[in-house]
Length: 296
Image: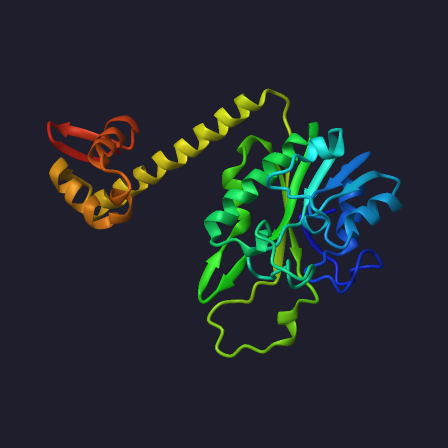
């Protein structure tokens, strides 16, 4: 198996009428590569993944919201009763395809991830899903998801980038790019497209390390804090570039206020944050009192 894959034929597994169905050959090759003895799909859809697993003599469970299982709130581990070698989900790609009340069921389900009120809600719920999957995975086993990106009204949302950013970086094991086939949009013509059509999706795999959950959560919190500090460092670095590499603290305050008003709106102590970044990151130096410059 390679890091770029393409399966035009979905195979005989699952239900071809189920929108967004993934080719059974994807699961077949993943199972051959990872060699799991046990597998669970917490968003099994029409059942493709479990059919492939059972055909390959892998002990498998398929769970789904349309069967009454909510991967955001219900424990995969407690439902299955044991940890597995591989836990792989295939969630909705945000609102790209609406499922409850359309693909399945007669009424919308408020727990349906395709009916989230915002991208932020989807990101937060998918982080809980992935942590749920991780909890159901054996140490050194693999957990992951199949996800695509989404563009609507000129706005590009990278679900895979957000998921990678929200999960422990030292457990990320593989990113596989999969070409999409047989999409509804394939039959549509679009005039004057300024940017390429999205014709790919991703398989993201993490390998679970052993250790207490609190240690993992602490690591994730530190990584998020580091990203936040890095954002401030980048803002101040850009400001210093605009100020030709050298400026007084008051000039820096003024330019930060112009450059990042959204950051200031959510942080009333932003001036203290600016001083902290200037003094602690090593990216800036002070040749004399009250004067700052980009470090060489």
